[in-house]
Length: 449
Image (tube, rainbow, N blue to C red):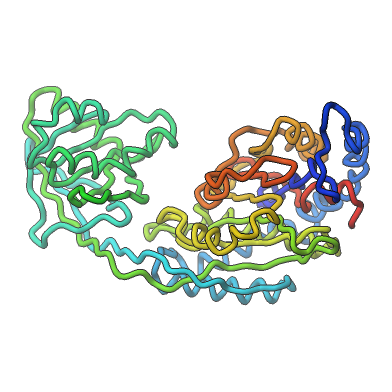
């Protein structure tokens, strides 16, 4: 994982000076862009030291080994489960043993859902046992299951046009895959839209660009005032097959059984650790990933990799004896898979001090070969970030992408926090992890190392 470790490059507060005044004002600045650019460039040796430690030094593969130990020991970590709480306690101990500061747990309440036994069998036009995965928070079926005819649609619009046909049926969505953000709406809203037209259950084509007969799970959301119906994902192959059958006029009947149960909210924790800032300890640079996972895998990619990379960010800084001006805070969220529940409660607890948050970062799209950093901020801030990213030229990770976002950090975005220089910058390193960790770029102006 050496090229996946190198994390959050300092992109935090470069549009604010220590006085809090704006860098750019009528094209006149307290410090010119050229001066800032030269200051950033002067930290090339620091950047190389971090790269060398992470890629070639004793930290090489450290995050991979740490992650492997956790997932091998604990396994899946669904919200509300004993295994998630075991993982939280293990991480609490690990962060203390790593020598990080202010390691603590912040209590939250999280959903507790269990899928139980589940099956789907096509009875007509032929017998076919289907692979399914119930969607998070779905209700179960009666013990005898639900046996009903199928209505196959490719969009919500088609469902509305054919609404009279849907009553009493199982709606099967065979929506084409466009991209994750657009196509996932069928998984999240499919059951509600089907229930509105009288369907008794819904089956959603897995939100994936590729399938090897592999259903995908995820969260779905019910809506007040709309009947709750069971809902699950099916494979791309089965969705396409039923679409072909329907186009030929075949009558399709499915027996669906789901033992899913929703329990009262459970006690859990967000896990926090810090390196306390030397000059502005009250100001925070937050790096994060979520510790929970779904129950059908070990959660190594979603989001063990992101959580452990975020931990590595602090470990690299600590190992090199560096002390950022601002507090570098690690948060390992709980119950992200249920809609960012732990992160929302963290936001509610800490939003009164929102002006002290210089940067919020999250990793949660998998740990692949990195190429840069996703960034949300002003264009002026972007020019500074691009200079900071140039420090990663030795490992060819220099791109600055747009539209940084993530389930656990979207609360900050939705709050309408001002852009740089006076407010929050939100970055998402989900697909674009760098191999370098620094504090917010203000350190580049203040030589705080």
